[in-house]
Length: 196
Image (cartoon, rainbow, N blue to C red):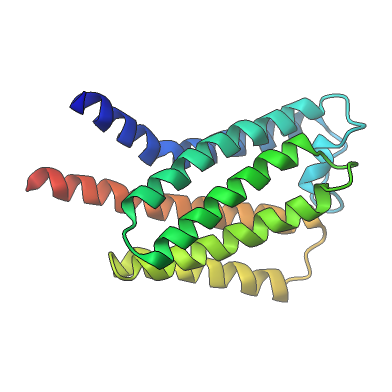
């Protein structure tokens, strides 16, 4: 039973990385299947639009990604023992539900645009709050989290992005880097715990 709980905890810990890998592969695969797609004029959601023949690749990929993101957010809720961290993790959980809904309501359906904006907004607020929370646990990881979000916001404002897709891709890269920062913290914590 103890071994099973350890395996489950490890799986939850790495779910963020799994979400990053599946999400990245989904975007790469969907782009490769749609040669008309261009980051100079398209939004990533165009890959899942209702009139696209193979839209299921993008939409199903996002839904699968969201499940792992949800598992990872639950892991963060369990390990963070301060209110700011729990609020941030809960917002990430909510963002993962919005990501699932992006796949359910693809481009061309009424709520898609609102859901997409709210996903990115919730994710940014969640990472910022967790960054503040992590300052109490690990200053380097907390600082890096905050710096990444600030860089993302500054880049979003000052760069004249050629398309929504290019802006979305930058935001996804920021989220991916944050997941790697968090993974470094989790692995470091596990190694330190084992040595005790």
